[in-house]
Length: 166
Image (cartoon, rainbow, N blue to C red; front, side, top):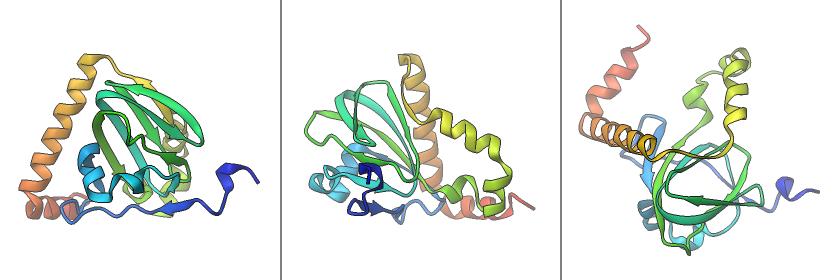
């Protein structure tokens, strides 16, 4: 049995905090460490959601499917459901982590099977890239706008999302 199929590896489901009822959550690594504890993050686990990680400060070594991936400020990683991963909780780094379940992209099973182009594109993007500094600042700006909008306007946003398909 390959390590990637090891049934002994803990599986982690997406459990958004109460502040993010929209199926997507953006959290800093420092906040995630505070919420879950460093020891919890430093164990290999298999995720059941998508995770987009942008390193904003320092350097770290993230482990994805048992391969070490060196990252520095500007590194952007996309992980998909079923991948094994482990955070570097020893190095001095921080970044923004966006978490979302498959249902955020594919609310129904039929969408998952009918939108094969999107699934294929996501598969191509899995891994790590290095963003130029100007692009990193654009991503951080978008994250700030999302956090401000979603937290301060939670009730109106829920109504908007419910009525968006009408």
